[in-house]
Length: 282
Image 1 (cartoon, rainbow, N blue to C red):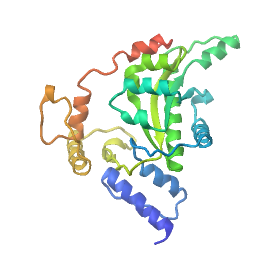
Image 2 (cartoon, helix red, strand yellow):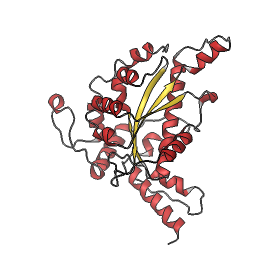
Image 3 (tube, rainbow, N blue to C red):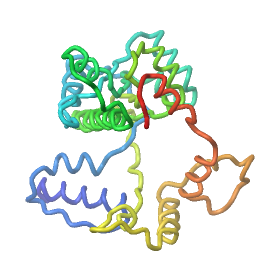
Image 4 (cartoon, rainbow, N blue to C red):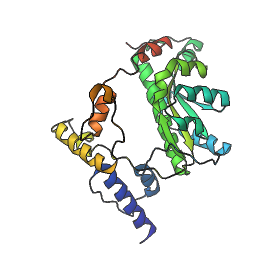
């Protein structure tokens, strides 16, 4: 089998595992290297002791910051956390994630709504757009930058794991990183060379998430139950969540797990934190 045919087969297999349906990939299509990396995405939480070259990391960060930006506003920043005491302080906030302490590289992606009003002031211009969209634009820019970093890192053989739970400690993270007003932590990212091959996580079927012309959630409950069964076969959930409140049930699927996860209040103070950073969310 030619390299391109073998590559097309691997992409088809990854998509079949991911979505539970058959796809046909033409080996003559351009860009199969990148498509294979995207379709084979995995989150990595275990890393080898191999260090990440500083020059390589700088290139990957430059790739990330080459990402599309809303109206060329460039409202994303990245903090590379190297100081051992600082890494330890952040890791202490998240004891359930030991890989944060162990990863060769830890990054924090931030939304920056600071530079734009600063430039308006310096240029003697009004800034009437101080509302929810200003925060939203900065958050989306930072998200696109992080996603672009993930793609670049995967291309050179690195593994990553996004850590959104840093937002459970937004104020503490902001203080630790000395983030000024209108700059907020979006997510952390551990980076390193994978210590092992991680599985491909099955995703919701495209019949739920892909829409043609009009949104539709017809038969959603039945489709979710089918996904629960398929995911349980491929990637069963090891431990039931919040059993002291909800007990144990069988079968225990993805939708039950996510319903239980968000049955408890999470980050109810995040809006207040963002307002305290100087954003208006109206």
